[in-house]
Image 1 (cartoon, one colour):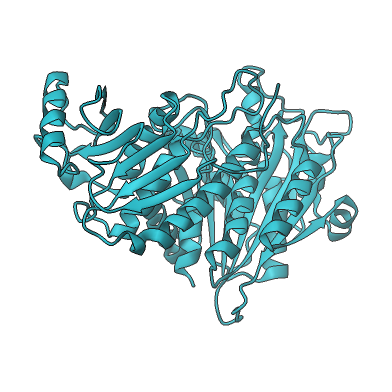
Image 2: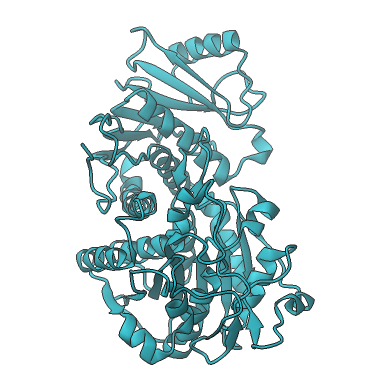
Length: 510
């Protein structure tokens, strides 16, 4: 029978504990150590007996410490833990937070595979080019990220497959200094898992109003304000993009407005607005997609799920920044009422859009959301997340977000936050001459350009709906939001990409 809850967002981890030492005396189902390429033994093993054993095993296996390589072996009763895993980190001078995150994510995935209920990471602070708190945050966060599984509808899913306890060996450091950061790790992991659960849900269940119900319930628990702007009000406001995309579906459009204001809030501080694309299923509409792979289009609401996750984490993290989240929820279906290529829609800010492709629907709803945010909320920073273009995946591959914007300072802050979070993002240009490719003869702009540079022309389209002077960044998460294949560091499916980056960014603004 189906099990679990799509809205729980819980890792099931009961304990996340820092422990003094290198964990050589700890009983566990799995303990993780690390080794740089070119080193004779793992840098995190201090115990002489264990170090000797580990070195022999790695030599027999031909392990060299290359990035993403791993050796797992059974201790056979010779040491307190039953299994040890050594992860290669690659060359020491190429180490980054992403390297540590991926290595620990691999360990988390391995832990699920062997049903390790009690696991440890020998962190050994001081041996990284990171502070102890950062190293602990990235390592624990990576492990939990890799241990995620969505098994709600698997009748064969087994209870207890995911780790119940994770502890970090912190060498000579006082473990109490890491308690706060590890509690924050659990908070972030919980909301990321919620986002991944929502994206993983089947679209017959998670239609726009179901997403609204879940968001309202979760917001109430987190003490975040939630307002639903339903179809009648969307019509009154003139949200032609959202209403147009939703015309072919039996499920009406709904805009979910979340608002977090810290108790110490002052308007002198920054106001951030996040806008998430929330297409709960995208058939392409009249411009119908191919059947092969269409089932993955349930993930076209990954941006909205990420925005929800971020807003839910803010109260627990006590972030001193006002944040609004707009979840633009629609379903794009073919129907006799659906919009057609050649139709013209009027967006909230009054601009008209010629429909060239009904499969370029995400930018239509984002146009409404961005223009409404500019006029109504007057943000100091406006950021949208959207699984927007396959062209971005062609340019950057499946694991990297395309970043565009009108404010280089904000773009740089996003890229810096992504590097610290271990999430890959790369800036793409907004060449002004490419604006010609979305010029329309019958409307202010058309919703699709030529085949080449599609991610850039989509960004230029969105810029049409951002008021001058509003710092704006567009994140095209089409690639990393949902993996269509499994990797050593991540299972197939939803990733929650962008949540950790934007939480880090928002906290840096406080």
